[in-house]
Image (cartoon, rainbow, N blue to C red; front, top):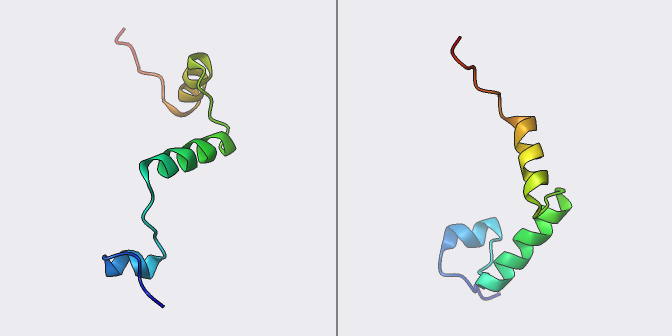
Length: 58
C-alpha cells in the first residue's frame, strides 16, 4: 500500500488531499444538509436563534 500524502499524521487520520473545487463542493453539500441557506433573511433568523440579545443601557 502506498501513501498518497506526505504528512504521516494526516495519513493516520485517513485525511486525503482535496482540490479547492472538491473542498468547495463538499462544504456546500454539508451546509445544505445542515439546512443552511444563501438567503440573508434566513441567515439573520438563524443568528438570532443562537446569539444572545445585547443589553441596552437604561
